[in-house]
Image (cartoon, rainbow, N blue to C red):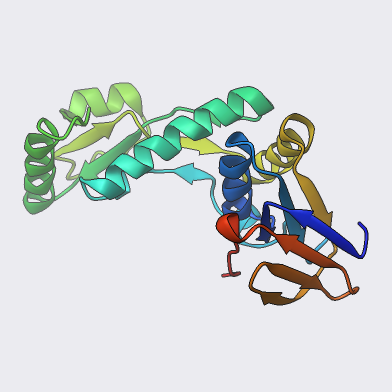
Length: 204
């Protein structure tokens, strides 16, 4: 990378959040540069369980966003050829108040475009014969949940962004300062960004 260069959007961090920003921007035709201080993603993005879990979000904007994210995951997995399993989820009830909450959730889900449904004990064991049977009352089934291999997904999404969308990755590059329309790295490089499309994210 030259000492002075330009890009529409600069993203700090090549974890899954940074990659998501890069994918979104690149699909819109913006030039994107990603800066990562490590030689590869090593943080929470590869240490998690790889669960994509829309049912954990409340109905409304957050749930709709989760379903949209799910759609993007499926499309990206198909484009990148990484493991993604649409396993769904089973939530078990061993107490009456737990089961009552599930019933209320299902009643509400009918009006929220959700496909969750109550399961009988027999249905539960048809789906998963290893469930603890003692005290089991019933369960809740949701088909929207998925799992990925975080390490494989991060690696292959990075390759997709480079090869298909021309995203430039600068690994082993620490950003020393961020100013309006300017990113400065510790090795003295200065990257000018377009004012209208300036985009950064902080590490967490």
